[in-house]
Image (cartoon, rainbow, N blue to C red; front, top):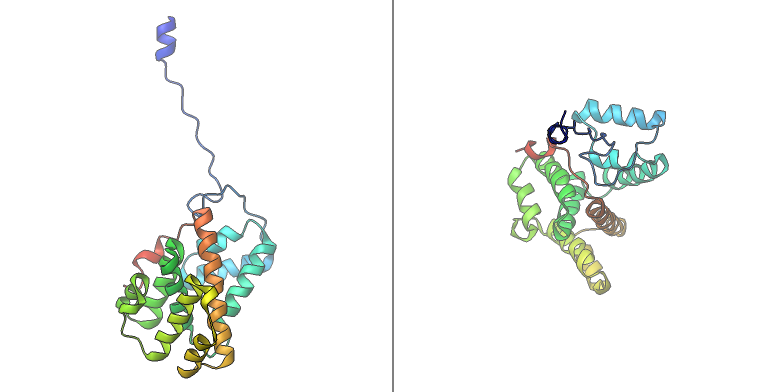
Length: 206
């Protein structure tokens, strides 16, 4: 075989090794061995919604971090509160809209559409909650969450008083602030690692 012929001979391209986090986030972190509790959690997600949310898979590189994240998330979003589950999702979307978080707007925008039964409301909150025809209570709640997101140093007593005037108690104000703060953290983490939402969210509840 001539040198030219050898050069022309095609060398099979090496197959790139599939990474655990392909399609989930940009970091190449391997999944940790799930504990029985985490495996049961994943099984419950699959049974209930048909898939495991990518944010949970992203945290599954470290079981301690996964447990800390999921425990606090579930407490904020699902535990008893003066805020309805829909209102908590509304906060997550309004905050994520300010931060332009693709993951959270996609995942929690779907939750607002599903819980409210109103796809239009979900889109309004994703784009601009101020354009939505909201009750005074929910408008005050989102105004506070967005101000806390954009200008935390400017939160003063009159901002808390506006929530009280809208009917929120002291514990409710804590919950509004805690949810807004949590999603500011997750928005920034999702941006840093290019976290990608599951495809299933895009078409759901429309």
